Image (cartoon, rainbow, N blue to C red; front, side, top):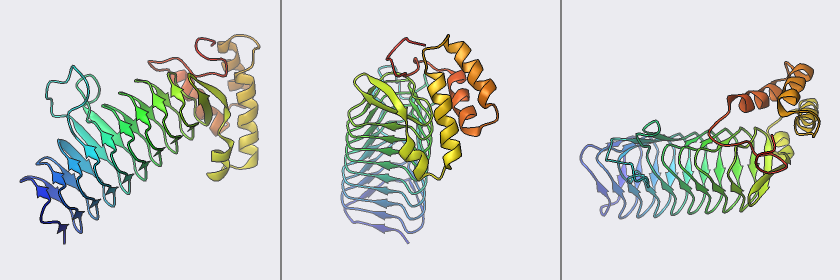
Length: 266
């Protein structure tokens, strides 16, 4: 049975799951879907075509589903889909997609969006992503699983961030970040691998050692980038973490690749 505060506004058409709680003065729009056991604090606004997965908690003054901050938006019925067991803290804002993207913004399962973080239109966040306070994620950004962004990070539109990457606080990221990468600075540079994250997530010593050797060779100053990619593929072919890293680089994107030397050195 849902627990709806008498001052909350639940619009006709909204879909409310089992055991949902909606706090005082919160507003749930007519196209919103709340999964089972969702908890909505006070003064939350959920608008547009927004779907909230089971077990998610949304804290006061968060706003999800308002029109995207994009001048090309003309009122298209774009969407937000939030996964299961996500924590969305105070003053977080999430915008739906646009026609220039996939009409969709997605947040994976078990993510933690801390106070005043912002996820712009057409973003895709994987599972187990952490955005610390005041992180700003620009439009069309793709974030892999188990990524951690320190407080105040700014992510340029169209950037890709690979699985298990770590971004130090206040990093200004304008280029793609490799899986397992560790970046720091304004503008952010690659400073190594996220070794702490790799160990915490159960990768064994041999896997990490192999990945470190591949990383050192890939970002050495010997030969061209293409030659180093080919050499690493030949030397470490079949190693899952190395293959994942190489696949990310081969896929390419709208932005350059973040390196230890800054922009334009590959």
